[in-house]
Image 1 (cartoon, rainbow, N blue to C red):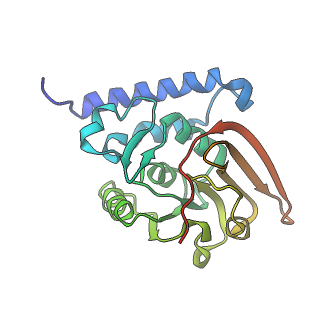
Image 2 (image 1 turned 180 degrees about the vertical axis):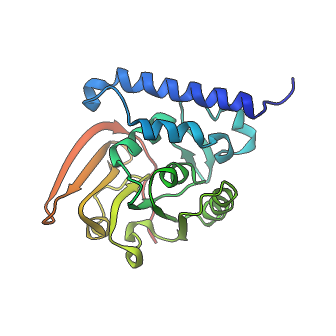
Length: 224
C-alpha cells in the first residue's frame, strides 16, 4: 500500500475536527455549551498533528485519542486540546504562557491564535524537537525554555492567559502571580488518582474565581 499524501492527511484532519464537534455536543451538559470556538476548530484543521508524534504512530495521529511520545508522556487527545484551548480563549493581541511543551502540538495551536506564546518544558529532548518543528512550520511567535514549569516564566510576565498541560496537586503560586488582572489559567488540578480540569479567572482587582469542569488524567507536573 502506498503512503498517505497531504491530501489524505487533510481529509483525516477534517474528520478529526468533525469528531471533536460531535464530542463537544455530546458533552454539552458538562461543558455548558454544545459548540467550541470556530477559531479553535479552524486552528486544529490547519495544524498537522501527524508531525507532532513519532513517525511509527503517525497513521493514528487523527484519531481522537492520546498517543505516546516518549519519556512516559503522551500528546493529549485532540478533543482535550480543543476544549482547553476553547476555555483559555486566547486572543490575537494576547501573550500566553504554556507549561508543558511536549513535542509542541498544543503550542502550535496556541501560536495560531495568540500574539506570542512562551512555553516551558522540563524534558530537554522534547523542547529541542519542538523548537525545530515549530520553526519549520513558520510559527515564529513562539519562545521555548527548558526548565521547571512550576516557576512559570517571570521574566516575561504578566501573561493574559496561562495553559498548563500537566497536573498539579495545587495551582502553583507563580502562575497566579504571573497572570495579569482580567487573565485566565486553565489547568488540570489533582493527584495521579483524581484530577479536574479547572479554570481560574483573575478579576480587575486581583480576586480569583475557580471552577471545576470535568475529570481528566494528565501526567504530573515535574519540578527540579
